[in-house]
Image 1 (tube, rainbow, N blue to C red):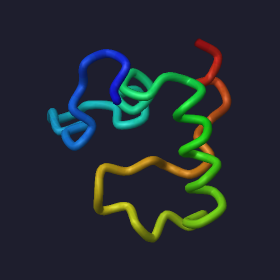
Image 2 (tube, rainbow, N blue to C red):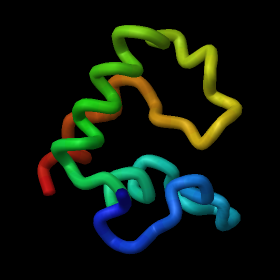
Image 3 (cartoon, rainbow, N blue to C red):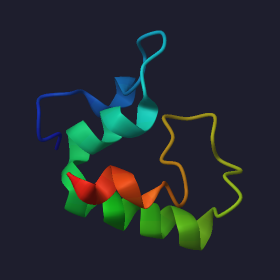
Image 4 (spheres, rainbow, N blue to C red):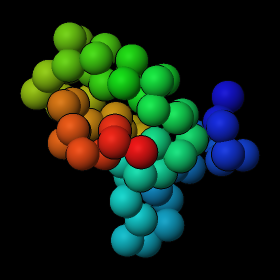
Length: 65
């Protein structure tokens, strides 16, 4: 469930929207860190990126919120 009322199937659907920031707002830091860990383990080369993507290994500065 999204923390801030976002429908996660439309994350970043707006033109020019930052996908990582949208995911961070939707999932929160803890859940997004878990999703990124799964992405790093099962899709480290970002093969499955055509969906609403969780990018593997984002910059650590994004989690400083």
